Length: 263
Image 1 (cartoon, rainbow, N blue to C red):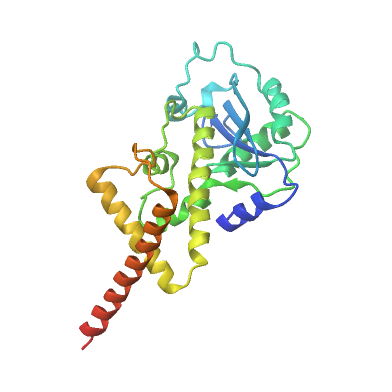
Image 2 (cartoon, rainbow, N blue to C red):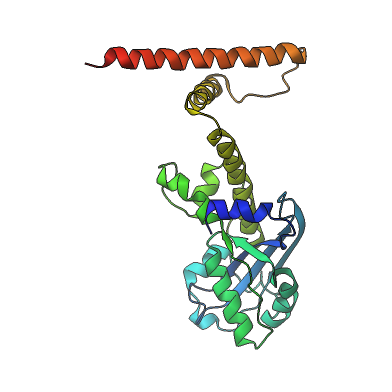
């Protein structure tokens, strides 16, 4: 699903439930490998605020065909999975979370393929999938195209966006990470949509102000709204207006220098 589809979906009235999902498996092949952990997060589809969470360890039945790297990544150990539940029991609980919902996640097609295969193999009720699935990889693609990340992997993206991952490669933790990616990039989409409504010179003014904010952040540290000062609101608004004039003048000077530099 592309970025604009994600935005239009979240703004539709009466939109369906939205559930972020992450699975850990014994390998990459839904036909041969098994689910060993499931993490789900039900969120408000408009605000992306968490409504409920679910996680469960699943007892594997065919460890002899498991990929050791996959088991190592999720930290599988017989002692850690001693109280794991059967796949049938876990899927019965999962059904209510995802049936008819919009399902989201990072590389969500991987998770969905394992779920469909598991429901089919156990002869359970077929999942309703009336809605497109949201893959946060689609939201990240512009970062890759711009050279800001060198991979679409969850770890790389989380590091770039400075998302804390206290329990990486665990299902619920990675579902939370995918949700946070959606939140961060949705904010960027909102800002970009507002900037797109500006005319050419206005965009240049905004870019000038943003460039200065970034330069100040690098020199003095992050900007904070609560620095102990208490200034009259009207005076501050006038300062912002003045900055717009300054930005416009800097853009005008840049244009003039460009014209003068032409042969």
